Length: 353
Image (cartoon, rainbow, N blue to C red; front, side):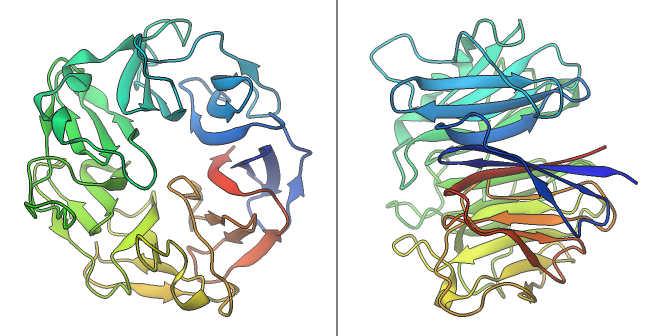
């Protein structure tokens, strides 16, 4: 049997859960990285290698590395940051290139940084951080942050800014284009601007890097050309607003979102936790609620609060603002509560041996 490891980042540390590939019962560790708000957990280049980011009111913002699947963590001495008066508030993403030679990090206040020595030192990616469109970037409800980094083959890099839009480089970061055609920004004077959209999450499908999905402040979108153009797929969803977005790694047409009431309420609609799944690239959506609370459940699920594993059928995992962790072993058809009294859950990541 395969082992599934679930890493859950919370407001008070990191929890490590393990199960076999049936994903029916789980063992949970005592908290790691205790006292820290854990914002992001991502894979490294080498087997068993992981990156995590954290923030502490006294100790500040840091990057941590594990080489044993998350059992132990080392703290990096340096963190990506601007050299002027802008304080580093959070690190929202850490992603290696496919060959492991470079490491990219997205921070708040919004900026992209690169390390060529496994995080020992960092440099700003100036062609993006000084892009002519940065004048349209503005703090959103979740602050001004750069997140959702992908580093693909051939020097393609993508990232998203909230609020700022989606950006792509095809030459390893030497030049960047704002690619937001078809994406609404209803809060701006111009409804379809070149940049300035409030992007909440973007994912590229592992089987096809040109197939992208986006959860935006103003709807859900799909791109079939690497972000050059976007088609809105919000129809049949009860709300256009939400943060969480994940994909079935085995099917380019299957994605999952969790709509929330509005940018003002930012909680599940009608007190019901429902995950919505599309199996036709957004042409239709189905509400998945078997095993999820359907009464008086006013929860929020943050940008990194939902994930999938690599098994087939894929497991889907949801962590909530109230510290509840739900697991589905069958692509969302049925759910089980596996932890109900954790601190506020910020991020969830799944690993499969």
